[in-house]
Image 1 (cartoon, rainbow, N blue to C red):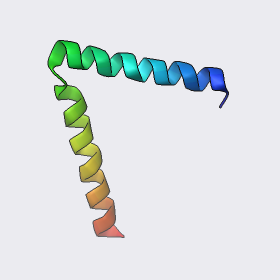
Image 2 (image 1 turned 60 degrees about the horizontal axis):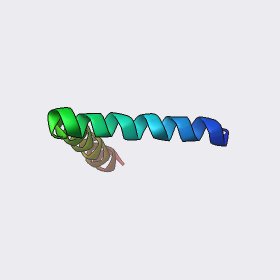
Image 3 (image 1 turned 90 degrees about the vertical axis):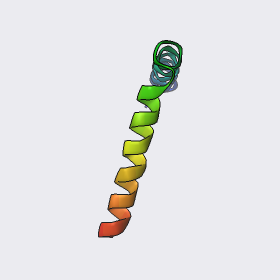
Image 4 (image 1 turned 120 degrees about the horizontal axis):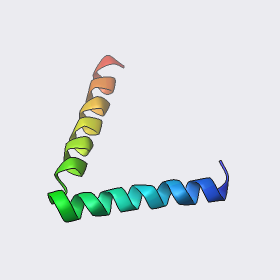
Length: 47
């Protein structure tokens, strides 16, 4: 991955998080964070 691609992916991520915080109060980010942590717990269980 080049620096240019990484920069634009990071920029898109920060803009998406900023829009979510501004429009939804961060509910979507929190939902995704809970799902990712749940996936981690599930993976540890099956390890």
